[in-house]
Amino acid sequence: MNRNGVVHQLIITADDYGMCPSVNRAIEECLAAGALRATCVMANMPDYPDAVQLRRAFPHASIGIHWTLTLGRPAADPVQVPDLLAPDGQFWPAPELRRRWLARRIAPAQIETELRAQYDRFVAVAGQPDFWNTHQNVHVLPGLFALAVALAHRLGIPAMRSHRRITAPRNGSALTYHLTHPVYWLKGRMIARWAAAAARQGMRMPAGVVSTPGYGPGKAAVEQIVPRVPWPRHGPAELVIHPATQMVPELFGELTESRLREYEVFRDPALSRRLAAAGVQTVGFEAVV
Image (cartoon, rainbow, N blue to C red):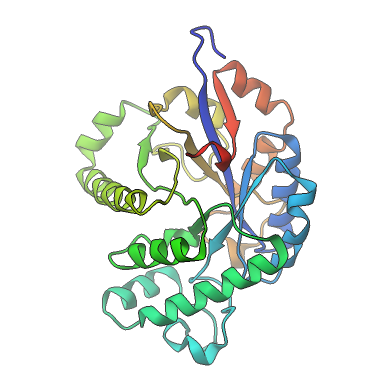
């Protein structure tokens, strides 16, 4: 509680568990430190079986599925999902997958087949997911968003990342940023409408995800970010991180050094106390109603 008696709820989620040992160990250390209260698992990647111990080791944490269509190999039989695969048998990179989806060169049934296969793998090691999202937000496309929401609903996954933007720019106000970046604002409005439709179907989600223009990649500056967040009146906000103990450039894409900086910040056991002193309570997806 801060000096004004206000407590804001923040879900800090670490994406990409299962990607590689560097990411898994970093997330585990950050979960043990306390501020991190949620992580999501890439069930198609080689190190996803480590998730078998997450619920036992971290009973306070929310464990979700990080559906992946743009990195690694499929969980489904490749002959069932040929539209998703490049000639080397791996998923198309995100820009190409988006282009092919918009050009209707990917059968929706193949997307569903792959997502179901990843879900089955996840359940085998970690039980029912507490929430879902996608790697590189690849589902945030016309048609694909609704497909993923409908499938998650049928599978009984209770919550998701909302993608409503809570903009906390390093300089200036959120309003000023929106006025000077109209495409960003317009896309945010479109995603908010999709999120509202998902909520009407019964999908629970945080109030929004914190976007931090001007801070560069990553959320290592979390203690500078939280005072600038225009906190929602109802429900927690979500802050997404990607920590790693060491760089693996062939997997990390644009998020390289930022992963190491996040690891150093979020593995600090004192971070929770400092955030609490600033009026921020870290929670998991159990706070989403």
